[in-house]
Length: 308
Image (tube, rainbow, N blue to C red; front, side):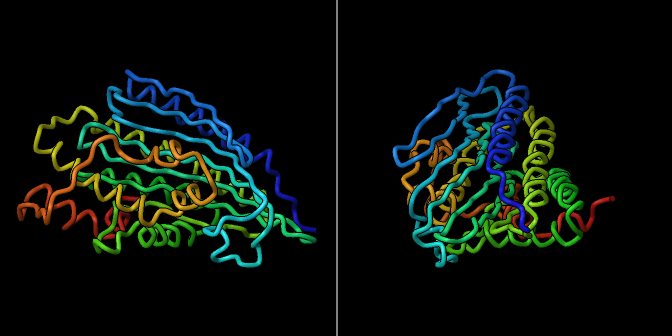
């Protein structure tokens, strides 16, 4: 007999994950703390938004928990699951975006989520999703190798093919088709994850969630004191425009949140505080700015040259 999904176990883990990540990031920032904003959704459910601004390292960051529910599945969730149309549902997850002020410290995004629907006269249908990705403005190979090495380590207990498959999925997903370029240097992305073994599926989501801060914190500490000036800041603000474009045009979480009547402030928390767009801007050939797109944003395998 198949295991019944334990929604309470998922919720307990996600709330604990949110707290642990906030504590680690506050320790790195050294100045600001995350404010706590609890909210309720009229249609059902609610969440806790944790937001930091104008810190010593983090210009804007948010680590959000949500647990929302409804009587009818949103269109974005039924596009690939028409048999669940009209089914009651619950969704919960932790989603975060960190925008540091120093252009040499990359932006990072992470999300782990759980969805369950209960069709009439049928067993509940669940799936997990999530992952994390890194968006540098000035790239460093050792940072990219560490990021992907940590992601692979989290995946290895679940099979040798898990990291390469979800790394490839991440490269495909975080791709700006209208720009024909990746958003960053990738990481992990998975969705619709259900092996039929709930305990194992939950353990995988936990491994991904737990490994995010282990992947990101060392990079932040390595780069937070790197000198920068007006040129680097200008380029960072310009490249942040790509982040905004992806989140508003392609991101599934943004679309689901808006379609399901989610809390707009929390959904759009992922957007950077300052950004700029320039018409047909081209970096100087051979510059550090050109190297970002010429070398780092190419979907490469960052573990090929790593010393394992």
